Length: 227
Image 1: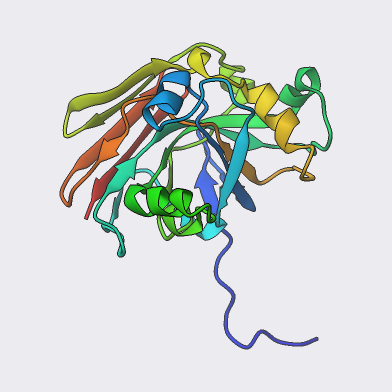
Image 2: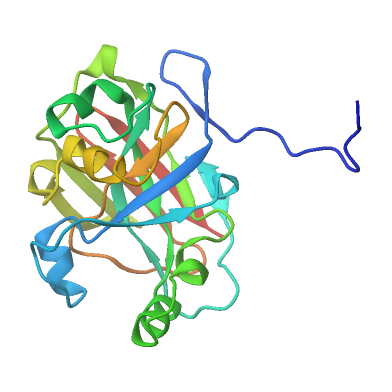
């Protein structure tokens, strides 16, 4: 059997409430899934869902100190509900999609906003603005068996104690089940897949030393400090 030419990196994994680790294989993200945020980003408030990805290696645990990334002068937070899948889902209907959700978590989709704007203007992919190191901060995953399937819950984000984002996950344009159904038309989804479901209005820039604290009622919390 051939040996690796160098030791492989550890499997990215997220903490689970009550103990254990959830191995992460892929990270999908939904763009502009709250009407107010879609408008603040210059979009329509009822466009079909669209997706982008982050590498699993971008996963960063809640509470971490994350460095201000290179190549940007406009580094933004985006507070989001995250779905953790635990069963296969391919070409599923929205009513059947919920069965694939193993748990829920709070996440921060960190974004190099100036790069995103420049790439969007050139009609180029968003990778440089979204898919970089430590750009997917995640709180512990709450099993659906323990917390159910939340459809309405307050979602908030504070920077240095000042509330910047405040909404309800019921305000999502596309529900968790609809997101999975749409994405499953293009991928064979399954255990280990995370889906960041979009952010409410109120996104903004952070600076070195800022403390981010987010929460979703009944789901959990997430935090990070900008290094």
